[in-house]
Image (cartoon, rainbow, N blue to C red; front, side):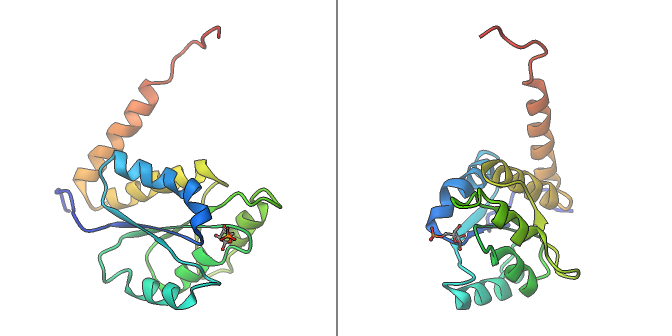
Length: 167
Ligand code: RP5
């Protein structure tokens, strides 16, 4: 089991459009906070299918361990990535304007049996949780990151006050 920090990206954050970045930044910010090496890319299932294919086919060999994929509307990106790699894919439904992200959620969650996408909540909470989950996954084979995520979780718990303030 590795016990050293890694330099090469272990987690990839991909998104269907620049417009998804405001949401997906939550995932990036969390990985930055914990100093976990990651990369970020715009890959659209509909607009850049060749980029989608080449990224997904090379992902495992390039050393990535988890892929976080955010997409909105007819959100095919996470499912298509998952169809092309055996790496775990965590899907983040982007909150769409017309249907508030319900479209994205159902598109990502309702994968047919055999090609799973671990689907998170709609929007920023989902993006942050995808990053936390991704770190938990890589920590299974890396003591260094295991310690980091455990410390972060302890800190989260310690910072919840027992009594609400009067404000
Ligand atoms: C999806 O279409 C993207 O993931 C994005 O959430 C949505 C809208 O994209 P833009 O029209 O803002 O580029 O593919």
